[in-house]
Amino acid sequence: MQTQHSVEAQFDQTVHEDISLFRSQVNDFLSGKLTDDEFRAFRLRRGIYGQRQANVQMIRTKVPGGLATADQMEMMADIADKYAAGKGHLTTRQNMQFHFIPLPVVPDLLEDLAKVRLTTREACYNTVRNVTGCPLAGVCPDEIFDISPYVRQASYAFLHKELTDNLPRKFKISFSGCKDDCMAGGIHDLGFTARIQDGQRGFRVVAGGGLGPLPSEAQVLDEFLPVERLVNRCEAVIRVFGKYGNRKNKHKARLKFIIRERSWDWFKEQVEFEYSDILANGGIEAPQEVPEGFGAYSSQPRALGRDPLLNVLPELPADYENWLRTNVRPQRQAGNVMLTVKVPQGNMTSQQMRAVAQIARSAADGLIRITIDQNLSIAWVQQNRLREIYAILQQAKLAEAGADEIDDIVTCPGAWSCNLGITKTMSLGEALRHTVANHPDTEVRKLHIKASGCPNSCGQHWLGDFGFFGNVRKMNGKEVPYYQMLLGGGKDREGMLKYGFTIQSIPAKAAPIAVQRVIEHFIANREPNEMFREYVLRFKVETFRTLTADLAKPAELDPDYYQDWGDDEQFSLQLGRAECAA
Image 1: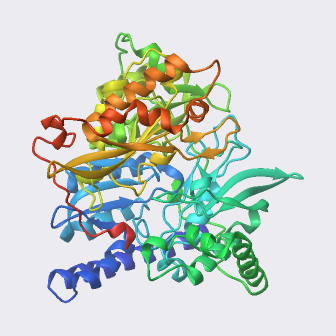
Image 2: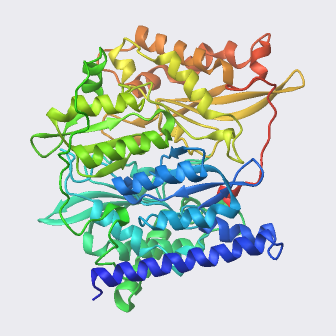
Image 3: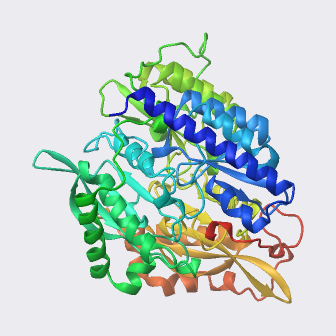
């Protein structure tokens, strides 16, 4: 059995050898020894995407389970300053992305990440992507057990492995620690939800989910899988995917398409065949140890910070009580609370990263928890520290109330940087935020808006009460940015994940008007205790198409409609190579 020291030494050696190899590949590409097509796979395996802007890259940093240490967050702040104009972006898969990075400095950036055992390896390409997990693992009042050790185990088991290095397409795994499946397992290739049966820990397992232009909801593979068989079961499914995934057509290569074309029963038979072979003949070993810092692992109990953040507390602003109401809640350990740091659309500055790292180290357990809604959580906070924490967040411009409310909008970067982005989603998100900010209706404030710049669902638009994804139409011989609007996504009354209903495509500049109209109709026509999805179902899609018909096909187009949000020039569709489908 490997010791903790040997596990760390082997991991560090593997990582540094891989970065050294990539450095030589970068040099070969820059000197003309490798073509762009030859270099692309090397680059994407390391989590490095091309952008629509020439000669710069997007770097995706994996954060297993969304758990980062204060040291790791400070390193990401240093990287933002050194390479990325002081900025970073949180994603719906609990990653941290950096944009506009010149290729020659990328190996240096990877070396900096490795110093705190963060990696970009397999954050892109046809691999097992970042394994997501409940960011409140270990502190959630409703959790069945702490899933973070199992997130780390799955993340580490399939990293740098031949089986998972060149799959037909990307493969996504999630873990939820409570029965409500807070991590949306139904949209994943494999989703694990904690269960206890006869005193034994295990998981309810679903498989075959996915979003994109054609969303599929995962189906139940196992009602109960003992935790000891986690890696074996994952490997069995990945083997089936590797053997039968469509390697000729990347648009039909996800696991969900295998199941659609060959049937669920056939898929289960193949999984059982591979699973039996693994149990009989062995497969990828379930790691008993992971390196210090990997997935925020610590071999020693974490000390709680008790250092002062401020010498003198400022006067409390008017919004402090509202922030306490919306952003702070009790954790399962009595006497402590967990707070949500609202990060508008996931965009952070290096100063903000350092501020949350300071709070985590000095007033919490030293961890920063990235949520799939592009926010941050900090746990193990004592009530008497909240005033000074709020003051630090105010200084960093991160003290906004309303976490997980309607103006806490989820978006992808869209055409700001992505080759596939049709529209500038983050600018739409800001426009919608102004439309719904401080809405007085309590039920409206519970709603969620999610938007993507194209149909590929990076902003998880299928899961929003209001969902939008970018498209384009031609009117009067000119291109006009549009968004397809969806309504009613999210969870139903039983907590089951449901996808939104497609309403119709609306000019980008009319999207806030459409949202306002639907909200007004909802307030005027809802029934007592009716959920938004139930209201949408009762009135049916045609009602909302009629409600917004004049916006979808205006008799006369305002000249402003030919511009996207955030632009001052006429819209023009510009797409690059689809590297997320490579």
